[in-house]
Image (cartoon, rainbow, N blue to C red; front, side, top):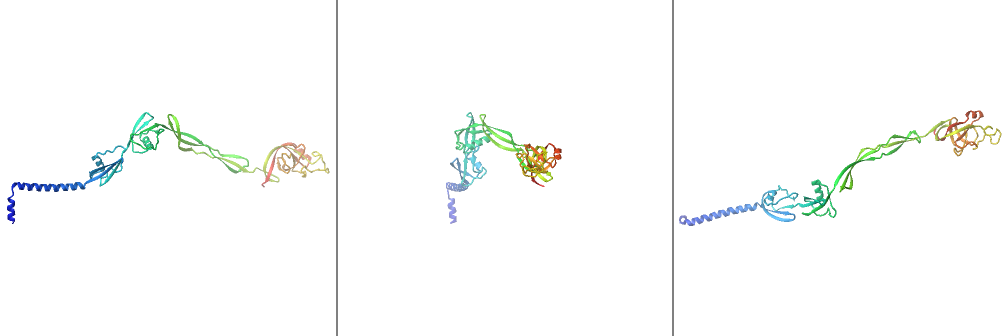
Length: 354
């Protein structure tokens, strides 16, 4: 049987052999192509690109996003935003979002046009961005809203302004503090520490439009010199005087004209045995230490200290004793004569302290 097959094979014509060769070649080529298609399909990814809300679908091989953009002629312009890192490798079912920047024009002072590219969506934010990038100071003109949405080709009308930074000094008034000083006589005051005003440095920002001041803002305050508090001492030590009856607080000091008198006829016209002899107008007994006064100036019973005479009590009056006069009592006429008439300080005494 094998012999017969061989005989039959060798009996094939040249044309038949050629057809067999062609068939085998086609089978081999088809097999190779199918393998290539399988390998190609396995490396082919579908990528969705969303540009300002519009969808585009691309098929691509394994590559980086930057290479993909270049391959598909997708340009990324200034301030466009891409939500995928350009160094990221493309993967299966990837979606890339691109937001195109808007091109606007700033019309400054109705005469100067400045093109500007932004990816911000509100006019107010774009103005701030414009000022920061161009170092110009502008504000939105009336009739427009800073909350308006930015649109491509939009004209934003603004006016320029200027800022001036100024520094001025302002005084800080010193405070006054009063303290008691028990070693200072009552009623006396003493400036222990003299008050000094402080100094505050104020930095302000002034904004001008068309050389007219629009607003003033304090941006910094600094105390460059601290104020010094003035300290005043107030005396609390009682003014006192030492007498033969003890030490007393001095309530008042009066300069007076002083004379002297006795109970005898030389002064009162009365002699021993006469009615009222030796009795003062207050009813007190006339004796050393009892003096006559004007009760409108010094009331009866007031304790006194009279320079050159000593401790006394106001207990008598006299027709010639008016105003700042005092008539001091002596037991004898000679003592009264020796005392004479003199100007003295009369101290009105208060409480006894010792």
